[in-house]
Length: 376
Ligand SMILES: CC(C)=CCC/C(C)=C/CC/C(C)=C/CC/C(C)=C/[C@@H]1[C@@H](COP(=O)(O)OP(=O)(O)O)[C@]1(C)CC/C=C(\C)CC/C=C(\C)CCC=C(C)C
Image 1: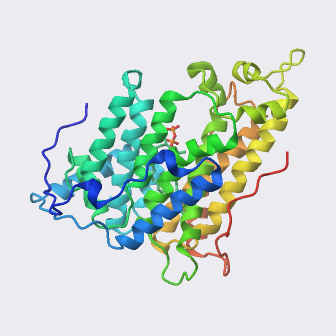
Image 2: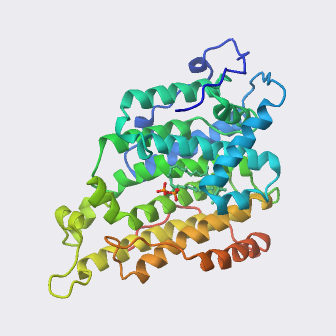
Image 3: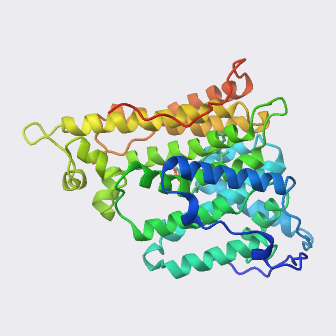
């Protein structure tokens, strides 16, 4: 289990955390994707205005404790996500440390519902995890990995709300196994992945020459999380259905393409030829074009990021987007085949991402609106 670490920070505020930071209940985010997006952006930007240099916590770290905390986060990030870790090594150490601390918190949160002990996970355990989150934002980390995040939020204007929302996304995973509309699915994607964009963008920062509204950059960050999660869902349709009886694609959209829930759960192969059913091909084309629209929206914001942070973001975008190409190459069979990006493609993509990060086109202002829906 998680190593116990003596709290090393004393809160000096004299106020309770609830007094210091009014909690925005996740349920109040909204019910349409527009409302969810607006509420998430409003709260992240408000936080940044109120705490431009991070939270004021009185940090009394034992000598070497902070360095060890960040180092451990770096080792874990390297273990789980080698390519991404390499990208962060090009960032200034302060930013890389912060991104690793966020990565580790997200990874641990995800493992609660997706890891080896997931079957014992209960809503009460997620409530406890959320209490730990509140404590670490109050300067009272529970263990050394939490301490790295406490130090991060004391340095960068990273809001607590996306972290709460991610835990709420894990609650959704415990409670729901079907999503009826894209608005419902969007809420889930925002909570488990769009949140990552809002956690990391304030660490990466914007390029000093960028004069547009911060909101457009944050919206692009959110879109990258949504695009990644939609891609994950499309890649894993078979695995989610066969192993977990889960269907993340919206059921009302299945219906519009003449597909029943049962068919999508069992795999859609034409009886006579054994080939993927045409209805599924049409459905997947629609889903893939929506995911691509979110990648395009995200791409429009990356050039506004500070130049020292662009490479890992372009790499993440380019590599993940290629999973959609791989689904197409597999003839849209995401029931029995798992789309992946071949090693040589990764090696080619990384210098391409580097070039794109280093030499942005002269004019690429971020999009002003979220993507419109592709035609059915
Ligand atoms: C610089 C950079 C790319 C930073 C992101 C680093 C970070 C904190 C990642 C955390 C990822 C994580 C463990 C999230 C937990 C929930 C989860 C599993 C989400 C899915 C990730 C994919 O993980 P994986 O491939 O391991 O999937 P499996 O567990 O195997 O199923 C997600 C699909 C979400 C990942 C979301 C992002 C990486 C969002 C990226 C957005 C930005 C970095 C903002 C960029 C800014 C602009 C302006 C575009």
